[in-house]
Structure formats: structure tokens, C-alpha cells
Image (tube, rainbow, N blue to C red; front, side, top):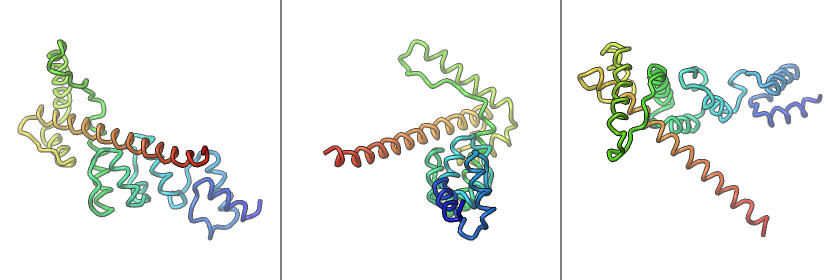
Length: 202
């Protein structure tokens, strides 16, 4: 295969920074991408790295993966995870890593959603939520829970149970924000696609 053809194929596969590569190196990158195998991050479009990150738990992210993202992609990832996007690139990355660390620490504790106060099962539901918070509080020392709260900028109350409840609420709020953002992006993309199709239909 000619180098020009290889470059065209590489471009379609989302490979970047290939112009100075030798033919054998480019063939290797193309083959790896076609097989769905990982390639060096510097040869992947930031958008593809972002997509890969959203397909695995946050605590499996590597710092080098985040550093390979552009600031816009880091902001998008922050929106998806429901956390603030402000600051310089290093600050964005540290915030994402802190978020991932706390999520890993509390991932196994999943209380049910809070029912409306008029629901006949509301009391039992609240007891279940409190039980899960207590299980989280029992797993960690007070200083550990306080450190988790500090990492995600949550007020650390005086009791372990209170800190555990605060962390669970933080994750729920982040999930809700992230889901809203994803839904908005999907709706916007759908709107753009419809606007592009309408002139053709006319």
C-alpha cells in the first residue's frame, strides 16, 4: 500500500501526527487501530481519547490519558461527570483525578432514590438510605472521609455518618448534572441533523 493511501486510512481511523512516520510505523498504527488495539496516545485524536474514557470507570483513567486531552475535551469530560470545569489544564485534570478517587472509594454504596414525602413507603426508603450511609461510614476512618469531602469540595460535618451522606449526595448530584448535559448534547446533535436533512428533503 502506498504511503498516501496509508495516510488517508490513518486519517479515517482518527490517527494524528503521522506525517513524519516511516511507512512501517504508519502501517503498524493503522493495523493496531483496525484491530481495536491501543496505540500511543500522541497519535490519537483527543476526541477519541475522550470517548474511550467515557466507556470505562473514572478510577481506571490514567493521568497521561487526561493530559493527552485538549482543554475543550477536559471541559466536556468535566461536564459529563457533573463537576466544575474551571481553572487551568492542570487544575482540571487534578479535579477529575480527585473525583475519580472518591468515586472509587464509594462505588459499592448505592442507596435507593429518595421517595416523595407523601409516598407510603417513604419512611422505609429513608431508613434504607441511612443504612447505606452508615455502611460507608463504617468502612472508613473519620479522617479518610474528611479527606474525601475535601477533595470534592464538600463540607465535612462533625460525624462520620454525616460525611458519608454528604459524599453519597455529591455523587448523586454529579450524576444528575452529567446526565442532563449528555441529554442536552444529544438533543442538540439531533436538531443539527434534522436541520441538515430538511433542505435535502425540500
